[in-house]
Length: 173
Image 1 (cartoon, helix red, strand yellow):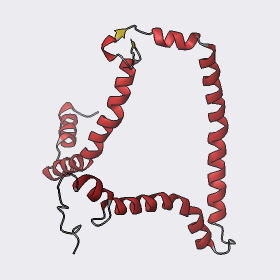
Image 2 (cartoon, rainbow, N blue to C red):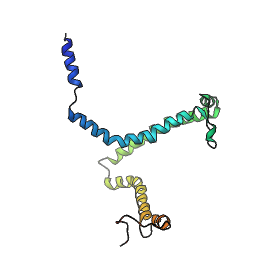
Image 3 (cartoon, rainbow, N blue to C red):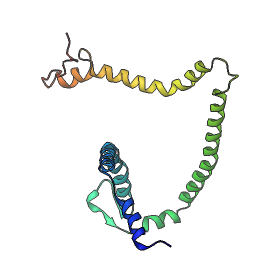
Image 4 (cartoon, one colour):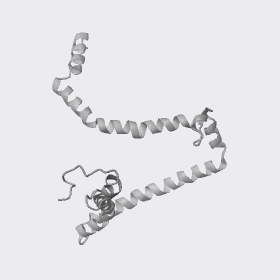
């Protein structure tokens, strides 16, 4: 059986954190802080706001007339026959589609990694191409938007305001 002083020594040894570890934790928190701020602003705040609004009688066109009604909205949803039908269909659809998508994904991944597949890299590229095309199209659109000679930003916004392109890389030679 251990004495209390030995247990206290073990606890105090574990609770001591070196300066390097504290520094690494601070750097880690600093580096993930943009993500944490984005999570709070764009995920948690809207979820909590919608939860709060769900307990009110909120009219979108007249937001000054907000009235707290408690769980009456939830009671109305459970009394509604259509809502129950839609919820049942959604659950049924999820129980069918999610396993099918997972099985199809695993099957296609197995096919694309098969040693017997001819022109494996070409087929993989063709299969992956639809996920690349939208990003490429967006890049071309922004390039056209920001072009100093014919770009929409320069012609429609900056020139009517009497402004010139401020970035030296975007100025015409």
